[in-house]
Length: 152
Image 1 (cartoon, rainbow, N blue to C red):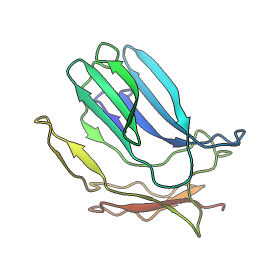
Image 2 (spheres, rainbow, N blue to C red):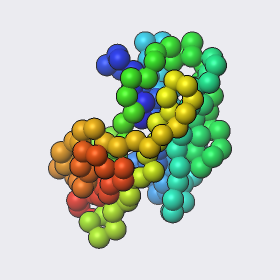
Image 3 (cartoon, helix red, strand yellow):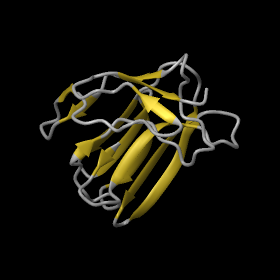
Image 4 (cartoon, one colour):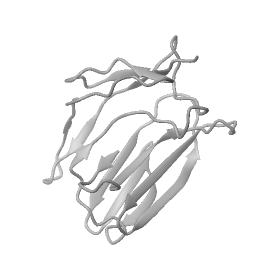
C-alpha cells in the first residue's frame, strides 16, 4: 500500500476473501480528498502473485501479476506517496487472514521506486504487533516475512 500524508490517503492492491465468499480475489482500493474507489481485479488462484502500484505522468497504474487492472487519474488521487506499507489485513474478525500457523504466506521481494524511476529493494523500517486473529514474524530490516491467521 502507498500512503499519502493525509489520514485517508492510500492506494493499495492485494489478495482477499470475505468470510461469506467462496473464492479468493485480487483487488485494488484507493482513497483521497477527492473520493474513494474499489474494484475486483480477478479471481485469485493459489500460488505466487505480484502486485505493483506505479505513477507515471498524470495517472496511477495498478498491476496484478504484471497485468494492468486499473488506471486512476492523479485528479482523483492528487497526493504524493510518503511511504510504502506491506501487510495483511481483514475487514472484520470473521474474515480469514491469508496463511495458517502450519502454512503461512510469505511477503517478499519488496521494492520501492524513487522519484527518478529507479526500483530498489525495500526493507521494513517498523513493524506492527500481532493482532487477535493474525500474526507475523516481521522484524525491522527484513525484506521478506511470513504472516498467518492464528485460528487455522
